[in-house]
Image 1 (tube, rainbow, N blue to C red):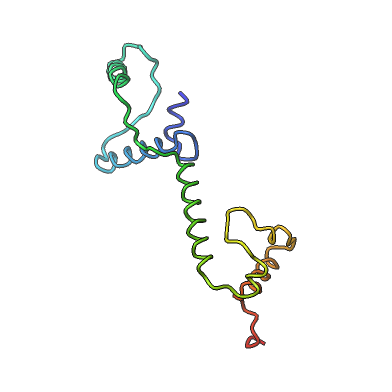
Image 2: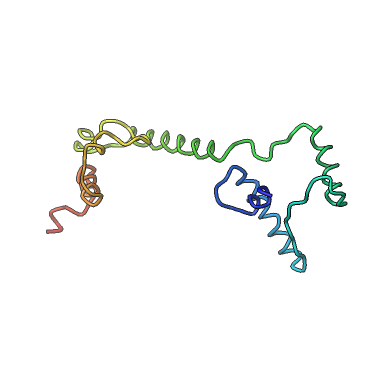
Length: 147
């Protein structure tokens, strides 16, 4: 019963990717054949229902096959890998870019996903912190020509 409830949910769960594939397949089928009605329900195993018996037979045959993964990576792996690549690329850009004296003195290391000690030390509200970063980086609306 839990599998039936889970397969129709698109929110985060361990079988989320399978749920999305299932829902997309159902949506495609219903778009192609709007007269169809699909019901997903749990059926007690070995209950003598023809469709269920066929599913049991096919499942038994499939259990002897070498599994072919539908997706070879978990979503958490993909997320982690994407973050790592972003930090690596960001770091390369940072290292090869010219920085003002303020930035070189204040932020001495390349970007990481961990909060820099400078930012941990600043205990202001977000608006003040944002303004401080603008001053340090030299990018903000504070030039003499605004006076």
